[in-house]
Every structure is written in structure tokens, then in C-alpha cells.
Image 1 (cartoon, rainbow, N blue to C red):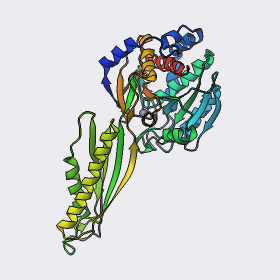
Image 2: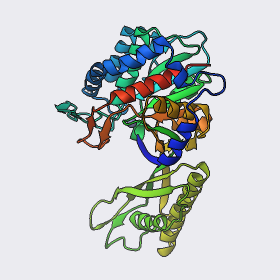
Image 3: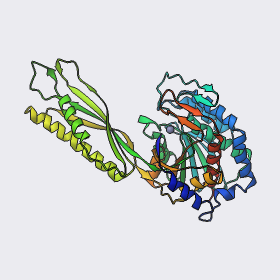
Image 4: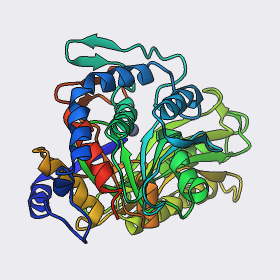
Length: 418
Ligand SMILES: [Zn+2]
């Protein structure tokens, strides 16, 4: 996951004004007066040691994107052991389990992602130094998985009854080239048209992410006949086209609000210093929280690449010799859930009644998919303090991490109301 805080001041103001019931359904503050709910919330603090133990155990099972099955099997075992119904694994490897209520709808999906950015062979042993846990993936997103399990455990133990229903999901493919494939499958196939609300617990801290930064990622490959640097001199050069393309991309103008970005991140190609290459490539990433701005920067990028190829061919008088393929390797749609929507207000109110401060933020998470489909959705943190996510030096500070467990638990119950 990747996120940034938008506006703490605005969020705090909103939280204060929405501490009470809305739209007829009980607000988090009212729910805390229910004995079973109160017992579950209290237990979430009392059993935090178990939550941490789960977090470490999950983290020590390697789960690179596309290879999440072993960690998924462990979540399946835990879902079954805790008494969820209809525990199943869908076609792409998402693990699902139901917590039934009085009615099947509204249905909340509470999710956390199984996969990590770390390749096979990475040492995922967790080291503990006082309050600090060190291990790749310990926060992102083993914290989310452990908090999800804590919610199931404490709701079951306290016998919390709900008017709607909850499906818990440990999903695949959130990171990198996983390209949100788990949640895409969930919304487009596995639970198509059956999800009314969606919350992803991703990463650490207490926050509510309601803006989805969309991204388009391309691998652009320039091709030509190539040849000897001396003997075939005069041949149009794929690397020449690539260079022209990079120069044009770097000159693109983008709005600062909504923040819209582009980056040429990787490049390669060529055969030897004395060969005209037959191939050169670049990888490009573009982002915005605004779908129109993302589409605009994408269109400019396409134009820049096409113009670069034309120029290189013209320079050498070789029309059509250099060709280009632009392959879309990442597509995360942009979107947002309004600040005054019930799900966002509940997310902030659940923090306020527990005495926690939270803020709104934007990010690129599993919620991008439901947000782009107009399904009310947010991404929240699992508490504690995470550092250096996506680095081998990732760490998680367990100090007061139970606050995140309580927040996620109370919010889950609030979103399972009518
Ligand atoms: Zn994540």
C-alpha cells in the first residue's frame, strides 16, 4: 500500500461533528453501550498479545504476489477454526469466510491482503527488540491480517449479533504487478453485485483513506532491425527513439491539484557498444486521484512516444523502421468515497469515541476498485507504528497497537448495521 495524509485538521473537525447516530443506524458510540460489543472491544485490548503472535506467524510464511497460497492456507485454517461459515478459496486464491447476521444484506466485506513485495527466498524471520518487531511484511500487511483475525475471534467470543452480514477476505494481489487482481476478482466475479460496503485494513496507524490514487503503468518496447555500429550506420535506432521519448515525457505538464505525476522508472536494451540495438525499453508510471487527469497524462504520454518514433525514423529517412509496443502492465483506477458518506463518518467516529485521533488520507490500495465502482469503501490502518514498508528493514512498533484493533473492530460492527 501507499498512502499520504490529506488533511488532519479537516478530518478532526468532521469527526467531532459526526460522533452521533446517522441515517437511523446506531453510531459507534451507541454500539459501545451494547454489552456484547463492549465485551468484544475490551477483549481486543486484553488479547493484543495473541494478535501480535498471529502477526508474527503470518509474516514468517513467505507470500510474494502470485505466490500467496501457503499463507492463504493458514488463513483458511484460522477462519475455519474460529467458526466462520462457508470458508472457501476462490479461483485466484482469495480466502473467504462468512459471519452471518440477521439478513444477508447489507453485506460488509472486511479484507486484508496476503501478498508482500518481497521475492521468493527473502528471509522473513521476525526479530523482536523490545517493542519493535523487525521483518519484511510485518506491518504491510501482516498487521492487517492479524487485526482481521482478532475481529473474528472477539466477535465470536462475545457473541456479537449483527443485522447485516460480514464476509472476511484475505485477498491476493494487492502489491506491485499483483495489480489488485484479488479485489478485482472479488468485485467482478466471486461476489459480483453482492458487496454493499468494503473496508481494507492495510498497514499501520489509525487513519481513514477515502481517496484512491489511480495509476497506469506501461512497459514500452522500441524495436528495429539493428546492425553493426559502423557497417550499418544510418539505420534508425530504437534507443534513439527511446531517448527522444524520455525527453518528451519529462517535458509533460501536469496539474499540481489534483496531484498528478509521471515517472520513467526503468530502462534497458541494447546488445553491445558496437551494435545498433534491435530493442530498447522503458517502464513508466503515472498517477492521479482524478480519473480525468490520469486519462489526460496517459494520452500525452502516448503522443510523446509516437512522436518520438516518428522523429527517429525521419531523422534517418527510414519511415516505419522503428516500431513501438506500449503494454499496460498496471491499471489501478482512481476514485474516492465522499467525506460526508456514512462509511467515512463511521470510520472517523469510531476513532473519536475510542479517544483516538485519526485523519483522512489518500492512497493506492485495494479500495481503489470499489471506489471506482461507486461502492462505499475505505482503507484503514491496523494500529501500531509502521516504518519502512516495502523495504527489507521494515519494522512495526507494537506500542498501543491494540488501539488500532479496537478501532477496526468497532467500525466493523458499525458497518454491519442496516
Ligand atoms: Zn499493503
